Length: 456
Image (tube, rainbow, N blue to C red):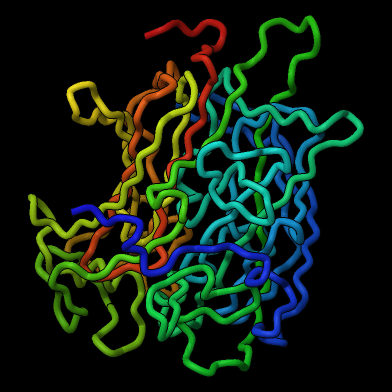
């Protein structure tokens, strides 16, 4: 049976109240949050299967001082961000949290819940992703950012025109990061656990607060350390009048398996247990995994502790799905997913005349193994300890979400009136809180193709 939206324990209701930077519920030790940005790199080459880009600018934020368990969750109105000179054609984006020297920070130290970008002019006609302060997010990414394609194929791009040459569009961001280093209950922390109310939601980890993984009553800040948000924008110049055929402009949409409610909670539906000494048959062998009652509860504790069947009709899987009527003719040329820990995959289906469903696209979650580089470990070896996880391959975390299988260069044709369903699947042994299932798609209206690309 599918989990329906009324089943949600908690529904995310973004409001200015819980995002205020100066709230009475916040710890007074949290400094006023104001970011400045500087350009740190230019023209970092990017080579992808979908195409290439050479023109780019990388921006780095001023230092964000975080103590263990501290939450940053900013409203767009307080977080303006720079972009290349407008107008331009957006080709790709990459976001991560870095140390002052520019090296990446592991998710086990600072968890990137999400960063959403707002261009100030986007008005969602479907979900719109994170809708805050009357604005709809254009693009967002989370912990999966380092291994998720965020690059449009050659010949396509998102046009950033500005309101006029004299009044360029002001971009802004919703930044949600949590320092998890030094937190005793990491799973509760990254899921924004709501305490006695149960479940998880961003409503339960407002800006400046301590996450739900900290001990009850904890208020004294620990040692702060500096971190930075860094993002790279790949772009092309828009051709001027008489400049020949230009790239195909795209429209960008976020499809939400939770019917545009963003979050839901998954109860345990299969037998499971914490690991004690030894291993669970068929599980990853872990050194120092959390014992029952230890309070550690890292994400990998749960991957190792599930006892339910992993295959067949009885496997421990909990789906969430939402159906919609597609509004216009177009060609999907790009798709990426956003899943939290516990996620399996995201799928897009189209209803058939015979009453069935046709699979159009599926993106699968990729989990870190804990090994550095390309190592997988010799027989009997164990991955690194939690404090020594390599950035981009953190054990038990979602570190990437695959693009849709197969090439989308010629695109997936949609027609106005198509009945589509987006489905997110999560493990349900044990439980997961505050999860998401977002599928972003970029569409060329009217099915336009770049010059030199023929119909399949």
